[in-house]
View 1 (cartoon, helix red, strand yellow):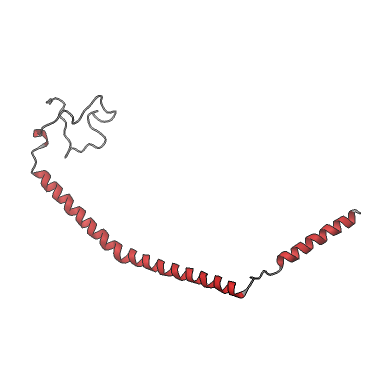
View 2 (tube, rainbow, N blue to C red):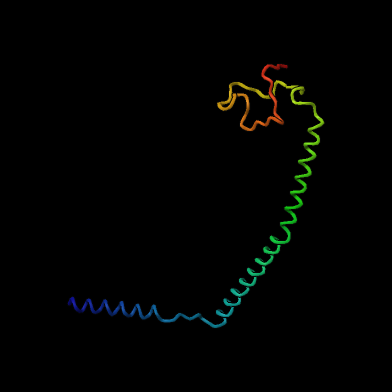
Length: 129
């Protein structure tokens, strides 16, 4: 009885393997050719889109970057030309809402922020309004 059961199971497994290896076919050749046409259209679209973005990246982006960099450079120079016409930092009015210090910063001399720039920022501890 055990031999019969093993033989029966082996036969079932063998039949399942044979069915799994059989080539699968589409229901009709029309469906297959439609699928192939759609895939070909997708690939052609991908090639065209890739080519478009390659051209944009090579021919449109560098001039745009160059123009925007030139504009930024001109604005930077105009800003510093304007800055030269202002009075020196020590003579400017220091308003009470500027440079409020409730306690010292834990770095440096305790009076300057992390983003302190000596060309632009000024704080006179002794001066009060």
